Length: 362
Image (cartoon, rainbow, N blue to C red; front, side):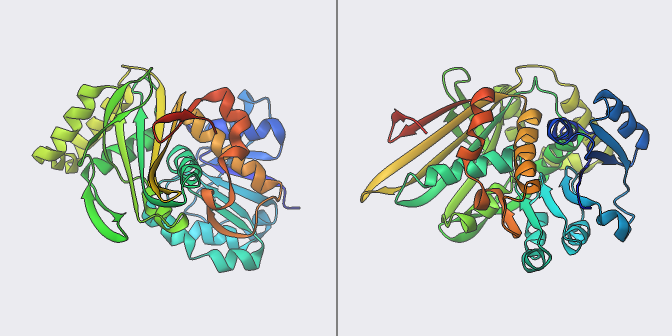
């Protein structure tokens, strides 16, 4: 009986919200999995048993008898390789992934044929960015006859609570260089370089954002057939954003290679409690409509990035578990529309649309 939902990292910062959301609909079938059975059990008690505990060490393979009971895995942890994904797919188990590493997601794509053969669905790029940004880009591009470029801008509030894994990923990627598509050509850029000023609505105002290696800019050129895609990141504290850009430009970011300095930076980011818990996503699609230059802008403003990430993941997981998704490996924008999440989005966020500078509606 394949009926269990296993959320790997299910008692973590984002995973517990996913478990709570799914546990309300599927009580007793959702398992918060991780290496600490004690933490999983403690969390299970907090949910009055709607979510059950499970000890899981990803370094140890599951027995075939265990795979026979698992219908869906929701992965909240970063992975070094695609071995676990392959085990899911070979066993006919559905898979949902909230990670943001482009290299890893590219590895998973090779399992497409195997997923079709085993009758499983693997949905990638699920969450805030990638995730909502992909769906917003897809929606905006459909407002144009030809989409020539998509600029994605992300503003995160420092007053929000950020999970350790997310903070570590952000700090580590201050060192990175990565590839983007520009006019169908591969271009190498550095994180926190090539800044631009973006208006995030009346409440937040104008903020500077800089290049950052979110995976949406790696996948969207293929899934949406857009020649140029870029993703940039900034924070609600303009001085901190400017400091990080200067840190990168001066070459001082290399100090993060020193373990104790890197760890201190992670700790400092986790302990920052300044600003708001606002999160804003803006997508600007440029191209042609009826033979003329045209722009579609989509702004989404909400609070608590972890909650929004979890809401997207739970919505996708529910659809996959219900059997409403084709078999194969897909990025979120290939099988979902933003409209399918409009019900809960309207309760959680504010959305604004502009077409050629004029306010519009979805």
